[in-house]
Image 1 (cartoon, rainbow, N blue to C red):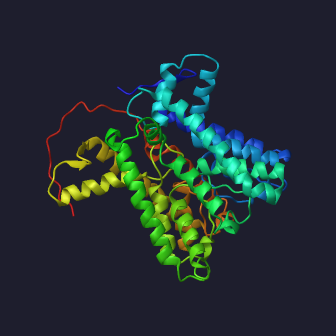
Image 2: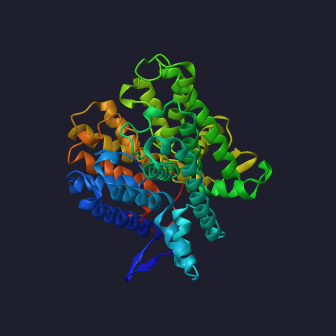
Image 3: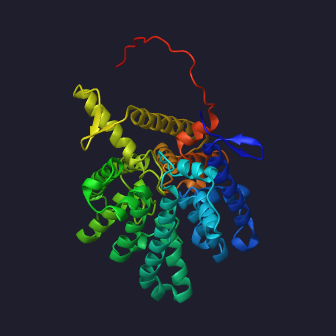
Length: 443
C-alpha cells in the first residue's frame, strides 16, 4: 500500500509533494528576480522564470549574464535559490523545525526519505543534520580560501561576496558564476581549480556516502553503495580527465597552444566538471565534436544519489554494466564486492536509464523542429539541462520561446528525478491476477 500525505485535504504522494515544492520555490524566485531592485536590465517573465528554474535545479544555464544583468540583491536571490535547490527545500524545513525545538512527524520523515532516495527512515534526521552542517562548514572554508584570490582583485566587500557566491554555487553543483567567461581566466590557477573541484566533488558524491565516510573510516565497514560509488567515481573521473586531454591536446582553440602544466590543469578541471558542476575554464564552443560527445556521456551519468548532482547517477550506470557482464558470463545473479545486488534495484536502474533517455530524446526532437541551431549544440544543450550541469556551446540565449520552456522542463525533471516525476503522475495499482509466463524473442 503506497503511503499518501494530505495537503489541504487532497491526497498527495511524497513524489508529488517534492515536485510541487520545487515548482513553488521556482515561482517565488521568478517573482523576486523580476523586481527592479534585482536587475540592471529589462528582464522578460520567460527569462526570469528560466533563470529561477536554472538556479533552483542547480543547473547553471543562463540567458543573461549573471554578473552584469543582476544587482547584488538579485545575485543574493540567486545564491539563496541555489542553496535551497541544492540541499533541498525539505532540508531547510526540517532544520527550521529542529531549531524551534519541535518534533519531526512521520509525514516529514517520509518526505525526507523520498527526497534523499533512502530505503528506510532510520537515521534520516541525523543524516539531514550532518548534511546541513557539512555543507555550511565546507562553504565557509571555501569562501575563506577563495577570498585569498578575489579580495586582492575585487576589494574586501565584493571579493568576499564573489567568494561566497562561487562557494555555494560550487558545492551545490550549480555552475553559476559572476564572471562573464565563467572561470576561463583561472584555467591554470591551482587555488581556484582545487577549491572549486573539491567543492563540487564533495557535493556531487552523495550525502549518504559523506555521512558514512565521516563515521566509518575502514573500507570493510562501508556499505555496498559507498564502495560502488567511490570506485565508480574514481574510474569515471580518471577516464574523463585522460579522455579530455587526449582529445583536446592538439586543439589550438582550447588547450593545444598552452604549456603542458596549463594543459593538465585545464584537462583536470574540464574532465571533472561535466558530471556535476558546469563551470567551464575553456570555451565549449571551440571544442572538438569528439570532446563534446564525451562530455554528453559524462553529463548523462551525473553524480551520486542523494547529492546536489543529477543525471542517471554513477551507481545506476555501474549496476547496469555489472548486470550485462553477469549475463554475458551466464550468471543469474549480479554481484559487487562479494555482495548480491537485488533484482528490484537492477530493474529500477534500467527504468531510470530508459525513462531518462526517452525524455531527453523527445526534448531533442522538439528542439530540432523549433530551433534553427547546429544539431550538435542542441543535443549538448539538452543533455546539459537534463543532467543539470549548465555547460553550453553558447546557444542558450538564442533559444526560441518554445525552446526555452523545453530546456526548463528538462532541468526540472533532471533535478526532481525522472522516477519521481513518473511516480507522481502514475497511479499505484496492485495486480489482482497472476498471469502465466510467456515467451518473447529479443536481440
